[in-house]
Image 1 (cartoon, rainbow, N blue to C red):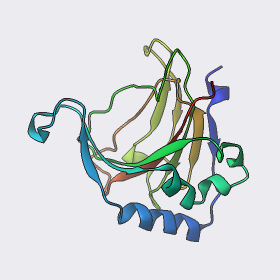
Image 2: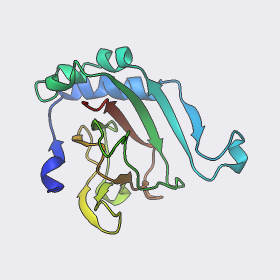
Image 3: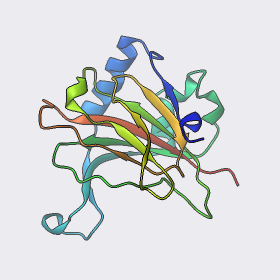
Length: 175
């Protein structure tokens, strides 16, 4: 069952640890990535992202937490994603090949977030026609799931006074 394969963890980090990750995200070098072509003005879908290699992911210390130590030796890469109310987010999967994908670990970076600002992550049925699970954006929350599960971010509402920042770590699938 999809709900059972999506694990949500709260309160794994101290507030000081969360502040450190927030400062890293706040001062990171971001770039605009697009799905359509090289001209930003003509891109329908784009994202603001800071890409992280495996060494950078490991330096964050997240994979040293007991809940995620089993992932530490796997090849991975990460991205800090910035979401705004004007984003057009689509249902997608992460790194699926031959019907299989590795795990994805999300971390919700913002230090403060109100429910009315939205920014949920939704998981859908395989045919992408129904919502199977909604995970609220809660500061400091981790979400671990198999990247083959279709999912999407719901953009923050126009009430949100700031960006919605998420760290996504994608692990290579086991062959």
